[in-house]
Length: 186
Image (cartoon, rainbow, N blue to C red):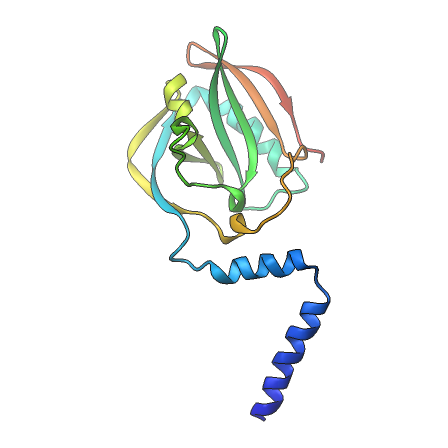
């Protein structure tokens, strides 16, 4: 019985190896080499926001629920701020939680994660530049531990995913004025 099991395992590896491109084998090897102890992990604070922003977040959440790619607990939002001339812009985009890199950038600390908040079942992650350029989000005493997913380490061709929703707002007196949006195809 044991010999049959060994032959079955060897046969499976041979068939699996013959049917996949070398790219896939490399990806599988990358996953096998990564274990839970080698993934980047850190704590980020829970944030609060002014309730006047709730109407905007309602629109984002409702739009996202109708997107083809929407998956509960996987679809979330990233928020970053940027100074453009005299205006401060806030950019909010839909992202896949498993593709978020929580690693710290020492070259550009404004791109590191400042914190997160939950709103109607969605998680919103804010970068440090939100804290630098706006007063919209405030830290609480609570925090959560986040960890990079193993899927982040699989080598794939990089591309811009235009199917995801993106929004831009001008920040004026701690209020958001819609500048543009690209909502996913429903």
